[in-house]
Amino acid sequence: RIQPRREMVKVSAHGVVFILVLLWSALIGSIALISPSLILLFLPFEATRRVYRMWTGFVAQQWFTIATFLLERWCKVRIVLSGDELPKGEEALVVCNHRTRIDWMFMWCLCLRLGILDTMKIVLKDSLKSWPAFGWAMQSFMFVFLARDKSKDLQHMEDVLSYHTSNHHPLSLVLFPEGTDLSPTNMERSNAYAAQNKLPKYKYVLHPKVVGWSRSVALLRDTCTAVYEVTIAYHDFEEGKRTSEASLLAARYPKEVHLHVQRHKMALLPEAPAELEQWCRRSFQLREKRLQQFYTGPRKFGPEVPAPLSQEELERAWRNCLLFWLAGSVVSGLALLLLVGWAWTLTAALVWVILTRLGGADAIELRMHGEQGLYRTLLNKGPAEPQKKLN
Image (tube, rainbow, N blue to C red):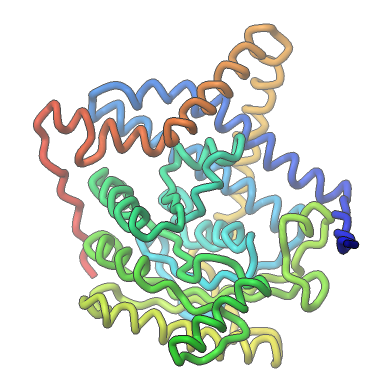
């Protein structure tokens, strides 16, 4: 039987530099910056836990900022915002459609402009946790990793989000309710689900998985003041071909990424789970119409709106993060000239592999410091009350 030939992945020097800089900064972040702080996870003190969470949050902010710089300056992707004018630094549940496997990278660009990059958490596939460097860092950032097993995922989401809110640190959650990207296979599955449940068939979105969305709203209702309904659309490098990891490697970047954001007050959302689920379904019906108008019309959602973060603040954030990673690169490079530098690198990598086998740094943090964690139980502390926000 003759097997179809696979299309070879094209590689461009420009794309390789983009990926290598992301990888190098992720290695510095996980090996040189975060690894020394892992010891704080195993200390039974609230102060050391807070220091660990603040430090990893700072590293996360710097890494996501360098990624946005590369996307917008090196790759020359233009970010276009439309919709509602938004406040700066507002804690929000950011809900977006999932056209490509790298949509979350452009959520970094959005969150930077919103002033919430340091508080951003993303819901991701559990398999990403085991990626060297990238996955190790995301473990320490305490992202929400889901195994696509509803019986386990809902409880895990509740554990992680409750832990975040009990930290008394700001939190903004990025959620893709479709759960996967707009590939032909996923579109067939979505249409089959629609036919089975007498729902309309979509072309530009998938039918959302509404239970996780509903649970997220219930868990974040007291801490997030708004829901940001985001619709993402692309001016692709080649029309009709979605951006992917391979296209980034080939330097086939999207020309423009359009982000249409509508703000909804959290207090005005329904409280009943069934009503929340229906709200989400209607939201994706509207996205389908909006995206159809985008791709068959003028290729824009509407008038461009200014970002909460000014262009001057954006440039300053990029300059500061470049200095941060330059200093980290110099120190790390000098350390690798010595035997002790290589010994530390290999030891830290081994520690990350072991932690990942044990469930990840995020799971260990929950076991040590979560509401049902070892230290909270030993010290007879009750669950911390989350700070409530005015809507």
